[in-house]
Image 1 (spheres, rainbow, N blue to C red):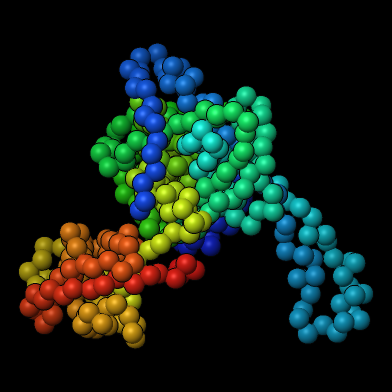
Image 2 (image 1 turned 180 degrees about the vertical axis):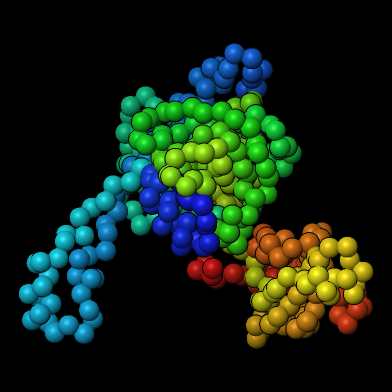
Length: 367
């Protein structure tokens, strides 16, 4: 879970999440549909709750010696080390997750397991398992774990987030404050929220209460399907104020499929630096509102360079995607498989130009 009022970077988001401690296709069995009665969600919860898990991780903080100046002589370093606080003691953190396959595949947040030395998963029925981190993607804050059990495990399935509407009912299940399975309900407050935590922000906003320890837990629709992964909140005091965010299930499924394959996420790369269209330029071009991505620079030997893109070009479409704002291009390129071809339309000196580009592979550690 990430908090409070201002999230400015992935690094900030992960630091705040610690305080709140807390594509190839995958096939998932469909969940039963529920006609939610006016009285509540008891039937839905009874069915999905067994597949929601409690996650406990052990991480090791920065060693105390890291507080000493680098240029301190060895004899003084030895002398002062014993006087420092023992920062290298193991640190415990908690979060939530959910089982998506009977053989023990679990989805959670990257920030729940980031830097973990050990990961333990506890089921709703009390069983506990050591878990392996199959793969983790900091850019979308999604991770996949695996546990081994002697029998098939309870599962939940993904629904689509494409057709969600503001006002749709949702249910969040997780382990806030380490209390065990807790259920909250609400509605979708907004869609496609950008909270500036990373380049692929496209969050579902909900007023279903999300608190410390809910990170990585599922957000269900009223048919009992997972339509999001609870990830962040805005909170002046650290508790729920009715503004929570979940990664949409359509994106989660793509990331989970990639991570399950080889532990990595393959993303496309174009090789351009971009900035927003200005209102002044938009007015000259006859646009009611600024739209498009203006190329500021092009990397040498990049797909963009080889395709003939130039500094000052205004990208208006990429493949079938119209580029209204910068993140439209970022997402469109990232979700295009490396080596795939795409058609790019640009405005160059007031004229429309169409180019073909072969997308490269984004470096795994690219921001």
